[in-house]
Structures are given as C-alpha cells and as structure tokens.
View 1 (cartoon, helix red, strand yellow):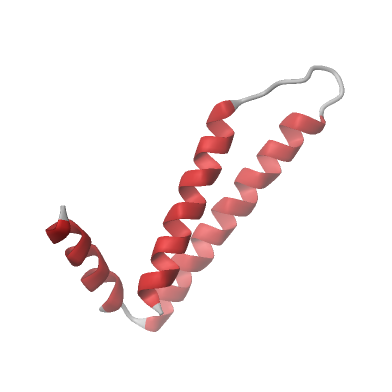
View 2 (spheres, one colour; view 1 turned 30 degrees about the vertical axis):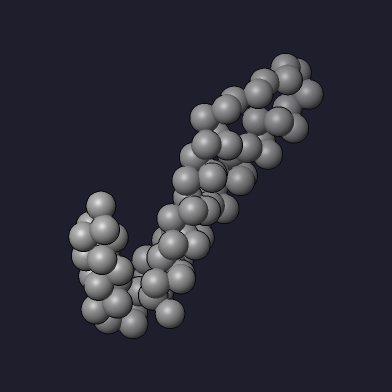
Length: 73
C-alpha cells in the first residue's frame, strides 16, 4: 500500500502544471455538479427524498480533490 501511495504522489508531482490545473478544475466542476444535484433533490417540495449515494459521491470527490491539491502543490 505504501508503494502505491508513493507511485501516485510521484505521478502527480511529475505532471505538467497545465495538466495539474486541468485535473483540479475538472474535480471542482464535478463537486459543483454533485452539489447542484443534491440541492435539486432536496429542494423539490413534492416529495422529500434522502439519497445517501449523492452524499457519498460528494464526500469521495472532496477527498480526492483535497488529496490531489495537497500532493500537486
């Protein structure tokens, strides 16, 4: 597991700055789309729905974004 972690951080560190920015930008866009989906689901006055999968997806996306940001800069 330590080897995989080292390989991932080395790969992220070796990328071009433009590619790093694009990856972070795409992850941020995915987070915003996930938030939009959660808001659309929970603001609907017809039927209150609690979808756990949306929150799990948001948590995973935020975790990946934070991980990438820490190891890119």
